[in-house]
Image 1 (cartoon, one colour):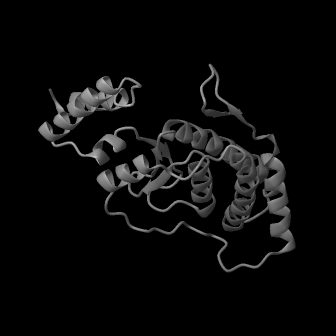
Image 2: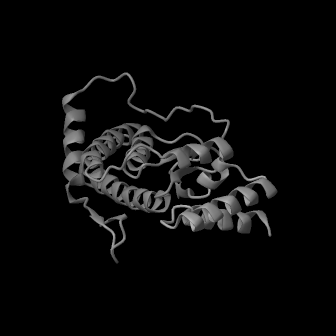
Length: 222
């Protein structure tokens, strides 16, 4: 029996260990402990096996823009996940029991905000210089993410579980703290930036979060 099959067998035994039949429960727990000892599987390994790790592509390879990182943090919190940015690969990794739906939601949110950004630039920023256009569009996107935050938090889950922490300790023991790119750092609030922000909030008004189909207790984005 390989490690993966042993792990699945242990999980099955642990589930049987919750049986209302005391003899069945005791036998299942003895078998689980025996398998854990034989295959050198610890309790944290069993916990971590319940966790998924799913990726979403970023718009940057090494250092994401601040509004995008903020959006990833919002989605991560909503689905009780942790998230990492994988520098060099240019992707976010959502880690948790609902990592797949978190990754899916992030993908759709990025698609929507990027389209809204393009539309805003085309409608309001065509006369700006390239650098100014980028900075003002960032203000728009930051406000868009802020507006979506309230909608996402309506579905917010609890803090990441013990299983997620066990997974992180096992698979990502050494992490470095990075900084997102903030192209408007140090700048005060101007009438122009307020206008960009208000347009961003308005553009996010069409974003809707809904429960998944087929009775699944997951969330989907329209």
